[in-house]
Image: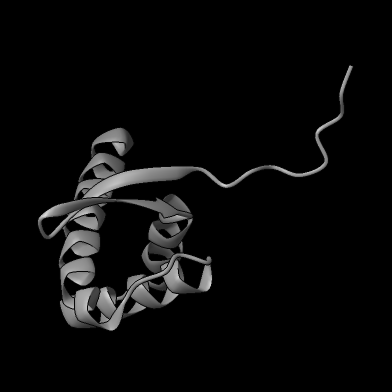
Length: 87
């Protein structure tokens, strides 16, 4: 039986602008931002973008605003799901 040395990060495909992009570490980024308790929309967008870049996702300068909007939209879905699961 082969041993698995490391857990591979999960990639999720999201709609960014007019294309789809695979993002690695998206759920981890969402959880990190959630734990920080940031409420300001622009700060949330900045932190999400920073984290997914830190996780090795390439984002060109020209698409950063599209990514911020897409990440924030997906983050709102994540929060809604998290709140629904609490009930």
